[in-house]
Amino acid sequence: MTEPEIRKILVIGGGTMGKQIALQGALHGCNVVLYDLQTELLEKALAGIRKMAGRVAAHQGVPPGQAETILERIA
Image (cartoon, rainbow, N blue to C red; front, side, top):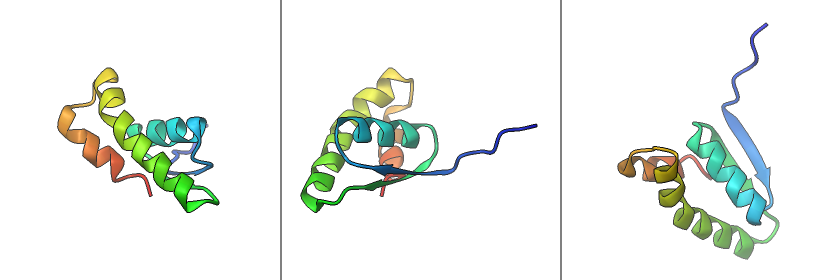
């Protein structure tokens, strides 16, 4: 029996773990919805993800120009 392919994930909470989970999901091809009750915290989380994306993408062997494409998967 084959396992179902995950295409979209929801991450609740934009804290330290939420940011990492959202970024890893996007790096692995999933569309990610990041949700937080406070808009301010969500904006802060998205800014943190943008900062981490290039460094994490390079560490995982993702071409430099593709980091922006990865960020587009996070809403």
